[in-house]
Image 1: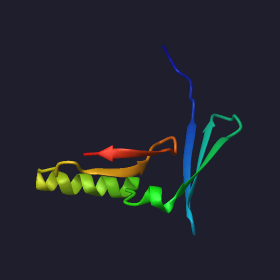
Image 2: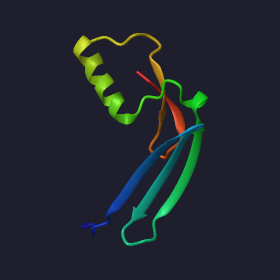
Image 3: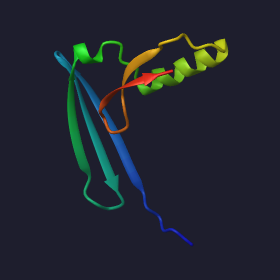
Length: 88
C-alpha cells in the first residue's frame, strides 16, 4: 500500500485586543481552498491562560522536579481553537 502526498497546513493566529483575544484557525488540505474559523474570548475567560509554549516549559520543570502539585489545572486553547482545561 502506497499513500500519495497529502500536505496539510494548520495555522493559529492569536491577536490581543482591549476586551480579549481573537483566535483564527486556518486549515488547508493539499491545493483545496483554505477553511477558516474565528473565536473571541474575553479576558475573564483567559485568566491564567497557559499557551502551548509555556505548557512545554512547565512540563520540563515538572519533570526535573519529579513531582506534580495536586489540582494543577490551567485554561488553554486546543488544536481546534476552543478554550478548554489542561490538567497535569
